[in-house]
Image (cartoon, rainbow, N blue to C red; front, side, top):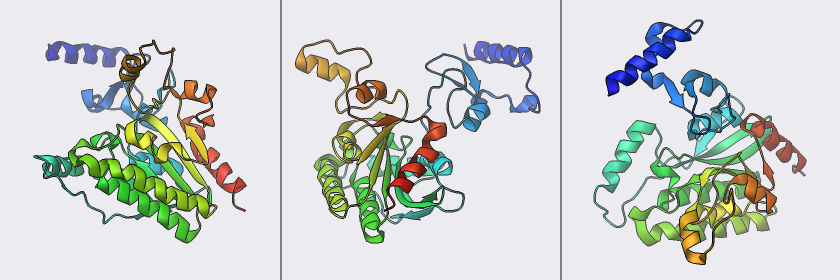
Length: 283
């Protein structure tokens, strides 16, 4: 019963009073359970720790807004491609209504936010995907915004950083969604021809068409700890090849060991790591 859960939570609060926190602040919505260590954590403490569990180090999924705040120097982020709007090419029932609801709830327009910023004084173009918006699925608007970010990097001769998180293509847009894989890949080919740096950062989860396109094409590929990274799910792969997959398959640590990614970076080290890479590649 929900009443029993509330009573149980109240008893926990009474046993462990917190300094400088009013009793009225100890609400159910102020707590989060870590899926890895199963501890009940005070949400404010998790946010202060860059949305990383202070007990086991699990990296919680975060919004594009929090990511920008964590990596960009204060006051330097300038959004681009903000005018790109979601379309409904297949007249998919309820699609635009769902988009409007998510826009109101998340306060963002789409599953990726792009812009210029500085990272410890180093200028860069960034594209940051947000799993809170249809699980970061890639539709025509997402593909267009990322392509504009790539083209802006080429025009302004700046390095590009993309933080990837996605459940794959957006089924509501059918084939048009799949076409974004080729579109973003072609744009990155031009970036490569221009001799400019592209850093791809894979976060939990990075799957489907995003993995099969721009996520895997970085000159340098970083990942957060224990991030799920792959194209199809483990169950589908097992059924296809008829074999049992190894322990930890599709996790960042497994992919690092097998050469798919270059480095696993803790969230508290991400900004400095990116800044160091940008500094090294300036010339």
